[in-house]
Picture (cartoon, rainbow, N blue to C red):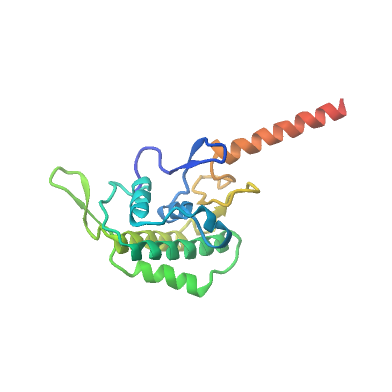
Amino acid sequence: MASPAAPGILMRAHSGATYRFDPGALCLELLTTGGPGAFRRYETLHAPEDLAAWAGRSRLTPTPVLEVSAADVAHARRLRDALFRVTTARAEGGSAAPADLGTVNEAAARPPLVPAVGPDGERRWARGCDGPGLLSTVARDAVELLTGPFAHRVRVCASDNCHLIYVDTSRPGRRRWCSMEHCGNLHKVRTLRARRAADKRDG
């Protein structure tokens, strides 16, 4: 369940500035922790506390108090890498590898985090507050995304040097950037500079 206030993950640009990236789905938030191949250099999931910290930054509400093992971290990286390839293929109009779909489905088949209403009327987690429960919840979110009405709107940021993946849930369906605050703004600045340079040449 998404937090009602400012959904998304806080990201840090190369400049050091922070911005909020809302990929539109829990499963896509996991992709901000690294990825396969060349994206391994962005890896942030090294230890159990790293996976728990990601859960705290995610749209899960409330933040679950998790029991996470080193094996869970390895499973999280494997699930994330599979999701990275599956959603990239979807964004590019290709087909996902059966092995990657199998990884997602295997995680989704396990018991997920289970929400409940507490005595105070507040939302809480009833059970499954462990690594496998967290990863099952993420994988089930991926299944919902990939088989739902916005499956055709999974996209990669249009910036040449940004590979963040998001689902465009806007009504017109014309979102191009991971964040207008970051890549969208950089694009506007570059466009403005190019226009001014062209005006100087023409003048």
